[in-house]
Amino acid sequence: MSVTGLPFDDFRALLRDLPGPHTAALVAARERDKQLTKPPGALGRLEEIAMWLAAWSGRQPAVNRPLVAIFAGNHGVTKHGITPFPSSVTQQMVENFAAGGAAINQICVTHDLGLKIFDLALDYPTGDITCEPALSERDCAATMAFGMEAIAGGTDLLCIGEMGIGNTTIAAAINLALYGGEAEDWVGPGTGSEGDVLARKLAAVKQAVAFHGEHLSDPLEVLRRLGGREIAAMAGAILAARMEKIPVLIDGYVATAAASILKAANPSALDHCLIGHVSGEPGHLRAIERLGKTPLLALGMRLGEGTGAALAAGIVKAAAACHSGMATFEQAGVSNKSHE
View 1 (tube, helix red, strand yellow):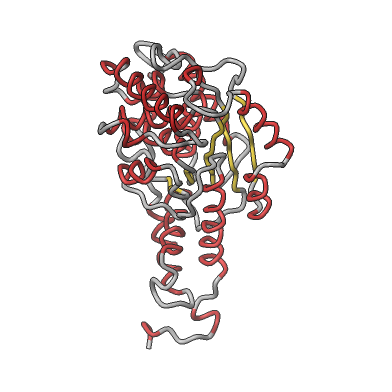
View 2: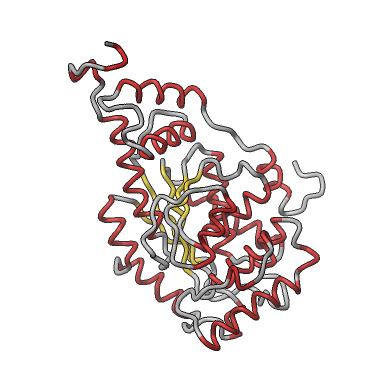
């Protein structure tokens, strides 16, 4: 029970006491790996992924119910003309997802992934971060709690994605607040910003971080002041997955910004996560490096909507299948050099 009763208290408590990896499952997976019909290490990173699955699911590597969760939100900062697309495109794209017409739909079909779309009050954009907080503490905590419900139907691999016109501006502001440097280090074209639009985007990020500067030492304050509903919901989903032994694949620049909030609050908060891909957004690789991660894919994509994480899910599924489906030396009647 919280002593102060502030909305963030429960999340602070969760972040202080995160469950660790499952040693017994990891040891068992390593022992099986030694017996598979291949030289040790011959599958490279696929072997590391299989061990990661075991450690964070608490069982032998398997992906049977993968899920892509896309969170959609709108942002008050778009009133400054920081993107070439109007905020109405967020709702239109959500409808496109529902109709099966987006890139993410095709990737989910290809890799047999479940897909859920979460519309986060699109008719009510967040506050304009250049002059006010994006969300109150209460609204931010409630949105994080909503994001935690993304796994309610059950999954064993969660792919986190988003949709939100203007949210690369939000991601850049979060990264600048967390990591410092110059705004130019973190601001990129997003959905095609250039010229005057890009200049306004850069100015908005600088103004926002300066306006909230006195409050940015606390990661959850960074989230509520500079973030958005989809950012808060993704953070909640990642946190819920940790509590429920579900490995997570994080998508692009915006999803990584949500994850970075958790990492800033607890250095071990993303141990159950892999980065699906490094996007074409210039600041994404820099952000991934701050997290100490290595992305699975580098395809120059910058679409968002969970596409990079969903493509990476195909690799994770293959890693699990190789580990569980390959014959052992004994089963295949193949001589194992280590036992000669």
